[in-house]
Image 1: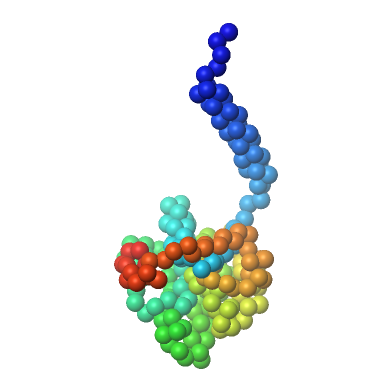
Image 2: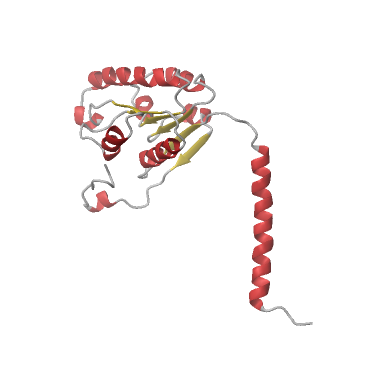
Length: 206
């Protein structure tokens, strides 16, 4: 009998490992029988939280789903996402608070007033079962800065339509929001070009 070559043994080992992995994946798929929308929180101090959320917007559009986007704490300058969605995706309901970053306005009362107006738009989407995906970009700051009532937000997220998925982005946001969420992902900063003196770039940073 011819002895197996090292490459054959390695192939057999890989095949057994992949078969074992496939069995685990298949089991998880079989166990995931509940059909409903999910609440996803994208947090952490790294770059890419909003970008990830807008990736999900594009995914939902691929399935002709109705999408709503609300942006809190964004600059007055238009972002690339907003420009593209407004020009090419008129079916998306898009609302931006538009006051600029809170460190730019330096006016807490004005920021709170703008936050309440913006939240009213978000709250309406969270009650409308025609929206299959709602993005609440930078909502966590509304909780952290106490611009909006935390319990009001949690109740609206908890009582939204069963078929509706929501993505909340931003640093922090408190433990209660994370406990309510179905999925929480933390994006960690390792390096950032801006800290090395590199200017923010169109199409990459905004």
